Image (cartoon, rainbow over all chains, first blue to last red):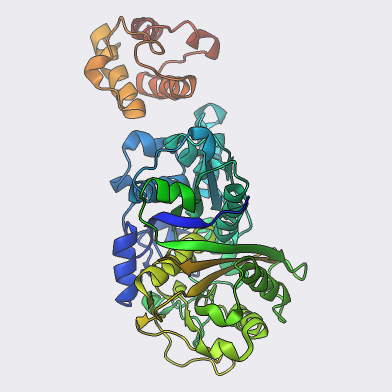
Length: 412
Length: 82
């Protein structure tokens, strides 16, 4: 069977806010969530990068100490986002066997893993917490959500670096269209603002080093862009078949009409400069949607603010859309949030859904001098989107040559 | 100087509270860790290790399965302080 799939709930905790509404308002206001990291380990390890997009509301202010104790910070963010999405959807009544989770992370429980190794070295094996393994495993966030909402229809974790959570949302489509599942909680999370990932990403010269002006560091498409900015947090959305949503009278934000995953097999970290794989992912998502390229009015771009990546994505988009690209409102929201890695696709899918629902594309900040090699129509202040049925896509690409694209249509 | 039984109970109750959120008043000598307090084996191991640190005793792994009630644990720790 093939059924329409709709978005009925959204949840997030991000560098801009502790929930979707505060995040969205801050995004529309052109705020930056990027700040200096006020931790002693920054100086201790002489980190070359001293700032990040840190969660606006610490998880410890939301969860009980006992909940937090058994969850890696990535799972803590995941649970907060999923609970908001679930409540926003009206806590759907659904048979547990027909409820599934597709929830991603890019790295997994890096804090738990490395803290446990410190404990082992300093205090011996008996002091290593017995919860260490379930806390560090990359399926930990998905499992935590699954237990919280009693999902027994399958709990899965896509791991494809920065494409992870877009892939998770795409994976939800096949589950819902199988007829076996009515509702899926999908999304992704990350908590990688730890000295090791910061040092390692810096070692590959992937991070911006604009330590003196963190709020201006994430500047996709700007000539002065010099790398991405690490972010942390999570996003989650409740996806369900249209029949199920209508039967329970749920509010519907948008329709999820396509999701596609391709791979470059080109280089482990560098994007294919021709953008071939990324273009195939966009086209496949549109084909699944039964849409024409002219239907697309808005793109939430991957646009991490790296010199090479932003151009490669532009090349892919031009390949797909040709001249129509000049009519598409492109938003690069990592300029405000930083790059949430395995959580990036989830929050950007939410931004895309809200853009359709509110007919407003969010702004891209820090675009002072647009790179002439990237002639996109970049949204720099909130922009009204057209009336009538409209379509938008959200792109995510990850180390490993992963390309993932999801497409949403306005719902009336 | 060795702690009294009631001091050990109070200290253990704090450890249990910190790990599980169970109120310290609920941690009584006659309560079973699993049946009454609903503490799972993973929390139990953390409580044991924290108790070793707090009271300066060693609780061998093979002894943990004998610690059915809070009283069992308090008695073991009190004796082990020796």
